[in-house]
Amino acid sequence: MATWSLYRSIEASLYDFITTQAISDSLTDIAGNSINFAVGRKNKNSPSLPLITLYWDSDPTHDITFIGSFTRFGPHTLIIDIYALTETDRLDLTKWVVDTINNGWTYYSYADSANPDSPTKTESGRINVQAFLENTRVNLGQTIDETDAHRHRISISVRKEG
Image (cartoon, rainbow, N blue to C red; front, side):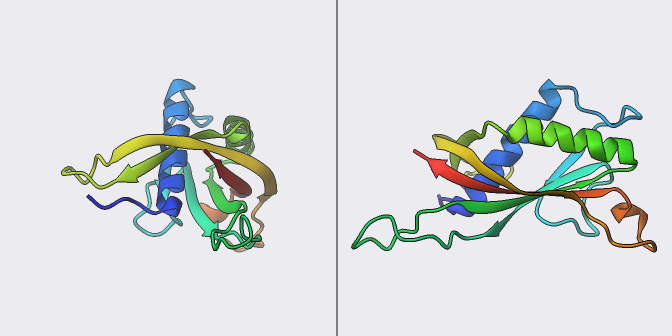
């Protein structure tokens, strides 16, 4: 069974955490519709709005962990895009996401299993949010697609502990 990369495991751990929390919080938009979630950038095959996507953005560029090591020690950047149907939903979903991820989440190491829809996961530490690098409305001008009319981006710097 192939073990997933650190990057894929961080994305999957966040997806698992945030979707579980959405169910626990009975998260809906202003009209009572449930919120869709996806890993990766939004594309034509993404679920309908309202939608929250999350994906890996960059590797750490920090120094090595210690002299003689080639392991990079440093935070990783994740992007969370919120695609809402109204401004109220954009603001409410943004606050919910920030409040939900602020204290970090459990990190799981994932591996392929016999059932591709159900990978094996093993608790392997914690992901801590080091900083909110960006938390802003995405402004694409006046003539934009309805999909991007109420879009918000949160970028976070995270570090795996343990």
